Image 1: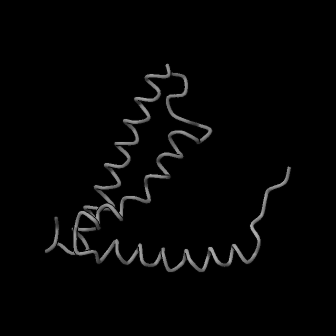
Image 2: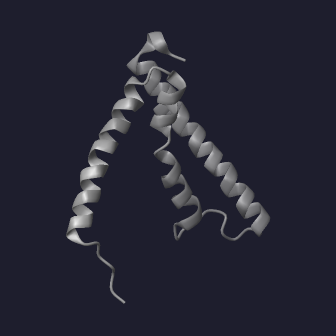
Length: 103
């Protein structure tokens, strides 16, 4: 069973829509008037990577533990990863970018 491919027209349309949307997202992450929105927008891209790493990667952490400990540990790790992302990408960049508007 081969990989399914998108038609070229659909792929081009999707790309033409995605590029301006990504540009708007990045601009808003740095110039939004509300600091909490800026922090959230800067930290949000770390969430899918953290979920993929903790639940779907082949070398998943806590794989040999009981199911309850495994799920609780993964949730705790997800919270820690997101707290680190908020601290570094959100609050840290907010402070470096504009110390006068720091939260």
